[in-house]
Length: 229
Image (cartoon, rainbow, N blue to C red; front, side, top):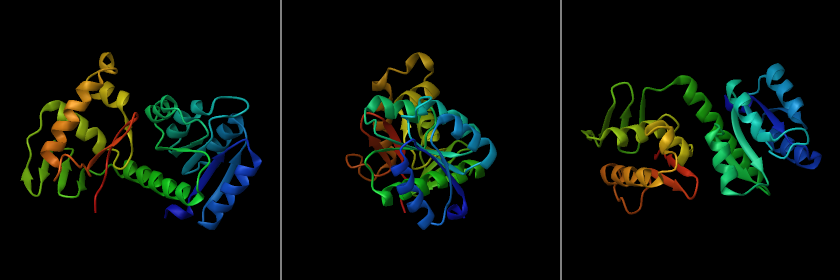
C-alpha cells in the first residue's frame, strides 16, 4: 500500500523538513531526509524511496537536476518550491515531475498530491492496457477509442495526444512534451496545433465540450486527462 512506502524529502530548510516529516509520519509514511542534492542522490541509491518531495532551491545544485535521476530510480516526484513562475513549472513537468506545488502549501494538499503521484507510479509500472475515464475507454494496444460503447474515429494526431495523456492519467503533461512527442521536436512552439487537436478531442469525447471535465487545461502549463468516476 502507498502509505507503507518511503518518501524522500529534499529540502534545505530544517523547519519545512520538520513540518513535512510530521505530516508524512502521521499519514503512515517512512521518511528519509536530505538537505542537499548530494545527500538526495545518495538516498536515492541507498533507500530507494517510492516518492520524492523535491525543493528546487538547494545549496549545492539546482533541484531540477534531480528530477531525471529520481525518475530513473523509479520514484514519483512532486516538486515543492517557492518558484511560482510558469516556465519553472513547465520545465519540471517536461523533465518528468508528476506534480508541482508552490510554497507556502497546506500539508493536506501536499499529502493529496503525493497520493496521486504514487498512484501514477503504480499505474506506470502496471502499464495498464486499457484506460477508462467516465464514458470513454482508451485501448492503447489496439489503438481503439470508445465512448459509451460506440467506437470513436480519431485522426492520427488526435489519437497521439489522447494516448499520451492516457498513459499518464490525472497528470499534467506539458505543452512542449505533447508537441514534441506527437508532432516532433521542430514543432514544440506550435501551440495552436495542440489547441486545435484538443478542441477536436473535446468535441468527440466530452458530454459538453464547452465545459470539459475529461481533458482539462492547466493554464500556461499543459493538459491532463482526468479519470472521472
